[in-house]
Image (cartoon, rainbow, N blue to C red; front, side):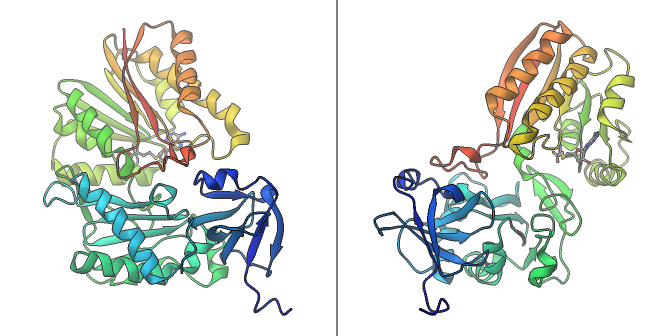
Length: 400
Ligand code: SAH
């Protein structure tokens, strides 16, 4: 039989359909008995049980996750499929008030598996959407998804920027560069989060240009900032810094090893609090800064480092890294101070992170209470069948 006409599908080993019956959206390569039709990475593929029964449709990938499931129903994957998925994603954001006019123009519309679109991220900044493919499947589908997005957002959406060079490093070989799939002229790059303004650099910034996932946690920093001396470590665009300023901090110091980030935070402070002398930013390594800063200077410290463990193999070192970082902060924070400490590594569980921070507290000998346990916001939902989707965790600690 000519493989060109043959349907692309995989047949699972006996019993390996169990996790799919519980709607887990990944098929691992080890679960596959045979591959039919010579699929190429990014192709749509059917998944069948060892009995030849349909179980899922998804995108074929090279690697330990072989299929990322789009649907557990045997249905066409086309424009109207994506419109349906995006419509339900939008409804979930509407349900939590994120689209009400005024205070917020930025939110995450699609959070991969959390929105039953594994491999796709879409962040909204005013009338611009930034779309990011984490799989070749969604790269291949980018124009269909962009059309679906335009159709469901209507006049509210003027620009779609496609940004996958960082998530698909070999994208150039697939025939595309970062760029606009819709609009692109006179783009307003200022987004509003809880009434605060931020310049968003989706062209060159990290992720889609902004860490949309810290919105709620930034509000908590604002609430506790009044009269405090605040250190925002790993500040990037200065989200936490801008909120601390509005919260009435006595001073806010932002630190990031990248001088580009220091420029971004200074811009965003200027945008919201022009001429305000309470803020200073420093381009410096976190460990160096924490080591050299005076003891008892700060009574609110935020530690929001980049993911220390990108993979499971890096776990042990990542946990040591979190301990080392937190012990430095525990040793220096003023008595009665608040430490906001985060991990965004998916490979590090909530309990492992807490253990790393516990170890740091014990090493410093301070008395520490947990006041809040923080996580990702509601527009970064976790598919209940895919617990791996829980990635952001944080603790607010009262340090005596
Ligand atoms: N808190 C930010 C996001 C942090 S992203 C927000 O709310 O938007 C992580 C940041 O850590 C990046 O900007 C990166 O430049 C910075 N970084 C990475 N390694 C660092 C180090 N060793 N010391 C200081 N900053 C570092």
